[in-house]
Length: 324
Image (tube, rainbow, N blue to C red):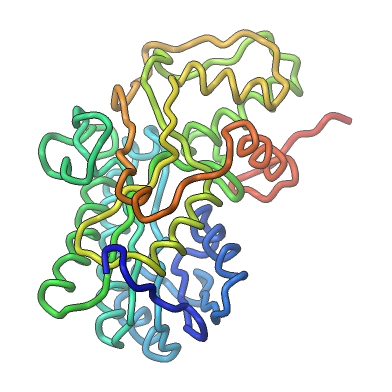
């Protein structure tokens, strides 16, 4: 079923691994409107890096469906600083969750990959066939290799045992529940926090990493969660499938859009001593479009929602300063 009969979620028990993260929490919000039973486990209850507790929990709770959104994630700085953590922790979680899902006979598993699995200089827009055709972006290759391994695990279990495990590759995500750590966050969250703090301090300028020239595609996380539910219902294949907005803009233009939404009117200074990462990254999402799904949230609307979430203190690693 790469796009034929649908898979019914009615009455199913759905385990969302990583439900406290930005993607996992968005998937939980989206599944709340489906007639299914949600299963979640906090870190103090279940450490997914540990094999035996993961297997016992999944055996005890018997999910019909698993959404594998659990991962250690971060921006360029975090990837460069903690390569062991990004490689080993993600490999451990993937192996434990996927292997346990097979052991209990999960009907369908959706594994969340990342667009960083594709080569640094992949043909644009990036089709799923570009996987493993060239070297990765060095600044996040540890995380990328772990994600590729998870994707290949799903393919292997499908090939050897016939398990209905699928892999989804999102573009750059932003939105509610993001990580706003000052050093370890991704570009959208980092800029929202930086511009807000500059606005509160009446700072005349804000430094943005890199040249501002790389081209990126951004997708609101609630749109992505909707795509995940759509794919659970309508997609079954050993081929990974891309999910993007189809729109791209430079980091400089994106930073200007964030500044406008935040209401910061100072100058943007680009620190060219910092790495740019991949020069261009636009996913070819034609396969999911052909199945009937498209993103619906505009960039400005999505950023406004993310800002409101940030100001309400719903993000992670967050202490928000406010005007008195």
